[in-house]
Length: 266
Length: 291
Image (tube, rainbow over all chains, first blue to last red; front, side, top):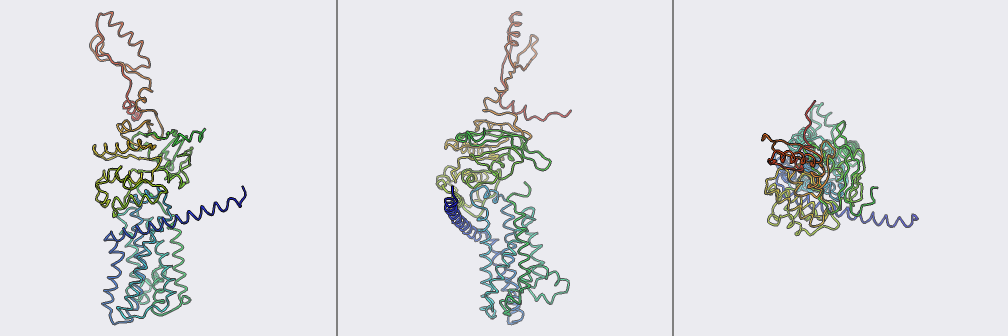
């Protein structure tokens, strides 16, 4: 048989399977959204908590524009981390340890479409949070609207990829679901405190600044701050973007390499 | 030759081995499951049953041997194969915040030609709880949901790994009824169990597995007969119980009855039995005393 005869068949099949893939991922995404809203603790920690933080710190720092200009991008960065890193580390650990992953793995649903649905759910929360926080910064706290929307979008996307993949990678290290909150908070809480969510990280003691410089969250907050407050372009934030991208690359490799559908104790 | 009989063969396993590091979990297993048959892998915990089944399901890679499931190699997990099999794992999680109805109809979307959702819920005996969240179900109801999710793709072949472990007697009977209804639907079933009565009640053919090897194989009723040994028991002239095992009881019976007739007595409590599946199972799986 000649190549000419084979190619249309193969491409038609590939096209049909890519349509089927998108449909499967979309169905899974819609199911994940439905389940997210039905699970009160997930909805609270992933959704309301950053907004409560914003309201509290906004009230504490009200009328102090310099502080608000630190806290609003800081909480935006924290929201990216909690909706992707924390949520996915917990969720993937739960799905793996409860056996849902193994059950799904035995069905014709493509694993990549399944994971795309789960990641899509997390990213939707990130987008909603960023929209709320940005709008609240302007409407409630009287800050300017973001200076550079393109830079905001770039940092949000790279930040999501970075923290989502690091969250999945962390789930590989968590031995069981009972210990998942401890692992997640052992990473999340120190990082948000040293990375300048609640104060300007440049005022922190020297050794903490060094640690924060090595970790990704400070660079995300710098990038968001540049885009929202100072109007620094992407060129001025190239260093921060590079650090985030490096962490994203490392996270993606670790997330894929360590992935297992099977319970740890099996 | 493998592959020539695929029309009426659902599973073919030839000299299958699986090692985890130094531990040899499966050592050279061979068996064939015909279409429409309920085939049981019977053996104690740790015999290698689950490892064998998980290789056939595509969860694990074999170390050596040949395997064909519906004519396909399950190793690379072809989606064409996953489309045609249903899996009930030993234990697996549920989406806790969905209703039974939502879970089954979501699963139906994974398959090209699924069964009817309402019909599958009814077949699994879940009609009364179709609107309930899965986290509110009892253990037995959750197991029935496992069946429903495994059946919704209208599979030709269903794997059941220890389907009733931990069940109370009533829940076991219900699960057995479901397995029988699978057979009535013409499905092929590969069942693992460590319950002898379950294998006897459900399986058309049974392979007894221990330490990763098949010790005996056949229909439950024939497994005892296949051992071709007879147990002859009687009371001797002094009234003491005697018992002897033999491949051919004829000379022994002739001797016993001849001696009794010569004494002008009866042979008391004479019986000739063949070992049951239970005897064979207990004998084969008994731990050999050290030394």
